[in-house]
Length: 177
Image 1 (cartoon, one colour):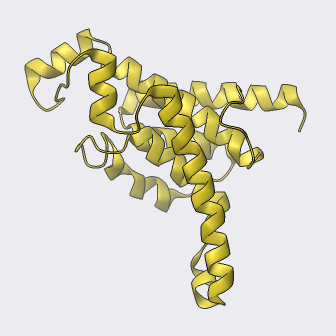
Image 2 (image 1 turned 135 degrees about the vertical axis):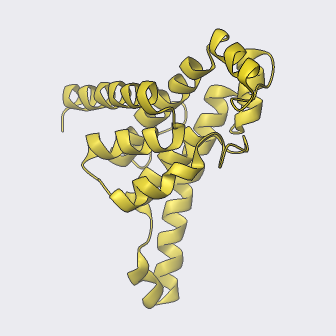
């Protein structure tokens, strides 16, 4: 794949994730599904399973859903399947190491890019306060402060990075894409 094709796929994943976020507001699932669509690594079961990671895992505002969704996408390529658990432990451990390296690379890039991997910390640093989408007046303030737009930015940039990592597992944390 040449560089021009790579860029168009990266732009396409940003567009797709943004469209999904505008409609469905689930950072984890929209990030994962956008990457799946563009990369051709579709998996309905995994997309379904990602639903509960929204809002920092079940709305608990822990690890950002955009990061968890993108990490799941990386796991589709670099992770181990059940067959590894039926084979020699050494092979399973090697495959696990490959997958965790990719997850760590993405998480470190995310932390450097946005300042934290924790949803509540991201919300506070980017809106000046922590607000709950479950409280109507706080939800209104979150809209006024652009929280959904900011979460969409986290998701689109993270999807772009993860898609690039699917093509280049050694992508540097400093490399701009």
